Image (spheres, rainbow, N blue to C red):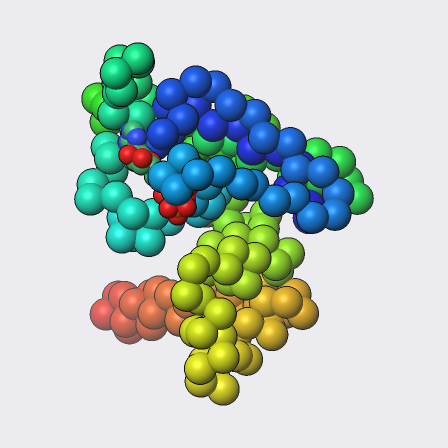
Length: 192
Ligand code: ATP
């Protein structure tokens, strides 16, 4: 999966609709301090469901909505869309929140759940909490990671993490089914 473009509107310092095309090879974003470079990375994390406000440098959910400036009034909503490309074509995932509490994820502009987004990207090496986004200070974290943490990174890179998660989900279903079976046996026993 390759990130091909980022669309940002009303998110943090992005008052105006902004599209950033990421060409093949290396793309560098340069700008003065405080001009919004890190806000772009925050926007990517946010679409992947970042729940920790600290990670995206905000105090509460509404802090990510453009707060207004001398030239522009505050925005009512924050929208971020990421378009990825793989051998099957293009896919766009998005997230939007409004000041009055609406919150929606989308896949190809159709409302969807964060779970569906996570499922699409699991095992692709793209997403949150994995090596595709290396924030300031995180290189240290990899260098000092425990063998267990390193193994999780390698599993994600090798694409086997998805099977681990599926195994976990299947085992949970199995134990739920076993519990139901036990209940049915009890009822049958009581009925004689
Ligand atoms: P540096 O080079 O210093 O790391 P940077 O280019 O990465 O800076 P960011 O940290 O991305 O800059 O941007 C910080 C700017 O974003 C600040 O000027 C801050 O006021 C602005 N900002 C953050 N949240 C909002 C918001 N909700 N509304 C308007 N502006 C915001």
